[in-house]
Amino acid sequence: MPKLYWEDFTTGQVAEYGPQEVSAEDIKAFAAEFDPQPMHLDEEAARATMVGGLCASGWHTCAIMMRIAADGFILESSSMGATGCEEVKWLAPVRPGDRLRVRVEVLDTRPSASRPGMGFVNARFDVLNAEDVRVMTLTTHLIFGRRPTAPAAEAGGPRARAAGA
Image 1 (cartoon, rainbow, N blue to C red):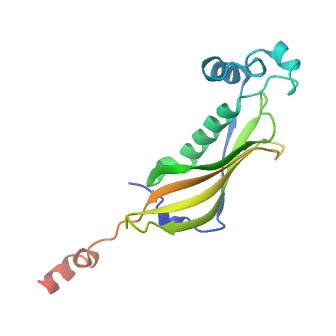
Image 2 (image 1 turned 60 degrees about the horizontal axis):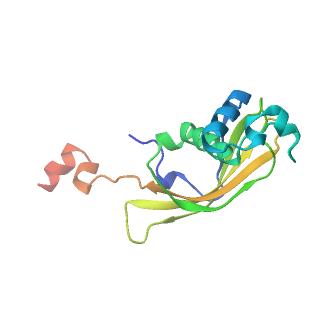
């Protein structure tokens, strides 16, 4: 049973989740499979790039953000996915040993006009390292189920049903 529904999100609400540490091995393993650029794979080659050392792929940072958010609140919610992202910005390199956390700010909410059982939450996800440097930001449009309401006869329990019979 979900603990969080659309009604639990309010404009201006801020929550923080994490941290998760990123290792050189994590960075290289993700890069080997999904983003095999030198700055993500090889420490020596990475020193010669504009980032000056090994760093996580931006897509790896997105994946870490999603894991932190999933563990933090999404898996205990009525999440129905998302309609997309307006923007993703990678602002600073994620280095081996960084401990990342995610700060989520609700920008606005609205109920679905066509589906009464769901609502939308527009939110900004900021990924921060231990020094409070914002390494990534993402604005997204989440979909959550609305809190179910009991039928009127059930809301009052057995006496309400008997009285209404």
